[in-house]
Length: 129
Image 1 (cartoon, rainbow, N blue to C red):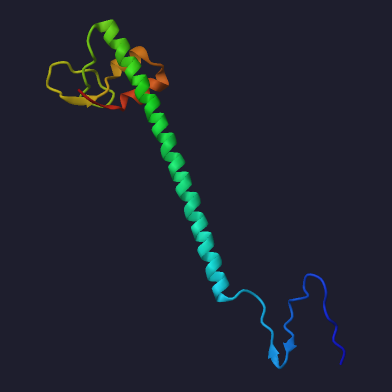
Image 2 (spheres, rainbow, N blue to C red; image 1 turned 180 degrees about the vertical axis):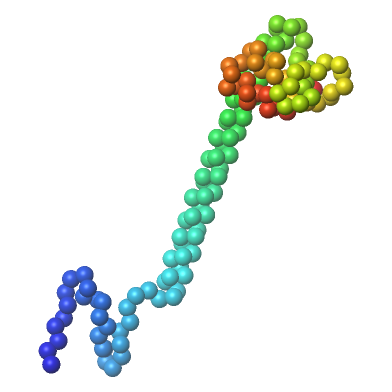
């Protein structure tokens, strides 16, 4: 009986007997576990790096918004001669009767001195007095 040995991409696909035993091919369980651990570690490192970058971008955006709020507050103080009073509700008018110690950034100050997109974001800032 003549055997034809395969060559090319399927050459290792058949198992051939070697000294009375079948030669095994493929990955061992240990190699598969090591590969899974390596991929898991790589995924963890990539996710951690992405999370750090995302936090840095969020912090930068928040710092820029606070700088704009500072400029709006300075403009309000220059125009009115006082700091804006806090608003009792989100997007509400300032309440200067002295009952609020803390509140929201007043919509009136935000819309007076900031562009519309910035003013909408400034209205959501909690403010301590």
